[in-house]
Image (cartoon, rainbow, N blue to C red; front, side, top):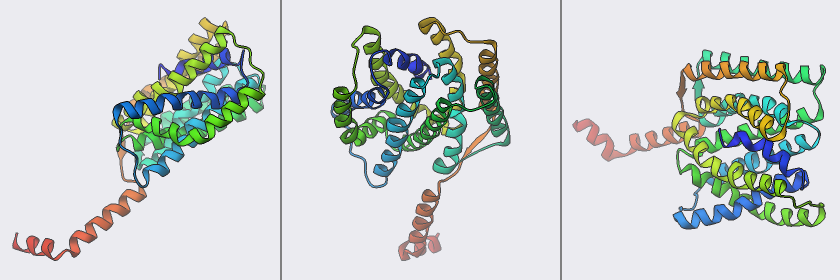
Amino acid sequence: MFAFSFTFPATSFALRGFGPYTIGLGRAAIAAVLAVLALRLTRAPRPRGAQWTSLVIVAAGVVFGFPVLSTLALGHGSSASHAAVVIGLLPVATAVFAVVRAGERPSWLFWTASVAGAACIVTFTLRGGVGRVSVADLLLFGALVTAGLGYAEGGRLAREMPGRDVVSWALVVAAPITVPVTAALFAAEPARWSGAAVAGLAYLAVVSMFLGFFAWYSGLARAGVARASQVQLAQPLLTLLWSWLLLGEHAGMSTVTAAAGVLVCVLLAQRARVSRGMTPSSAIRRTVSQGAVSQDPVSRRGAADG
């Protein structure tokens, strides 16, 4: 969460020298090189079977969806501080996908706290947009939905392989698209190679797109996707601080109030109970496995002898 809190300020810096599409896909192309090195150095085993499908879902969410849409939102005039508070809805989206994809069952207290946090975000967005949702807000909402799916799927997959391998293989899966498209974008979109722009892009590629996911996916797998994702509700507060210190953006009282309300909600959500059930596919596999054992004559004879 701490690593991701710098993402929007870093994007603002990168936009000073590069186009939004170059940033959105370029960060993944650069990170793909690091991913290949990491996979080779750790001798990570290749994914198998349905894991490839999960990796495609992860790539769609966190390699393509969130980076491109959030960068376009900042390019359409959204400030880093405003974007940070809107993306405060991301933990709610992740929790919903945790139910659908990871088979988790949060308690009523969890959902109450999460919905209350979402209400703070929606109120802030409508107030900041003078009673309407802007194009930048729509892009941010699209970004948080795709990221929520990528987070939940990646957290579920991290129960089967290290979180490091999840993001690395997702970047490799996306590389046949991100690498050539990035090369074409660098040639087509004019670039101003300033120190701030390069530093911003470097942070997005190395930390936001790669290293940050090592801890994030591992944490989601260990603590549970829904519960661990609520920690990210506190991210807007950190991003507001970095936006003020690094970009000189002024966070008004409404922004601070919304972020503080979200922080209270994350504390409540962390105290709520979240049970881990089985996904539909896991239930089917378990049923098939039990059926196979019950039909095995050796198993039946052993049970009868016992």
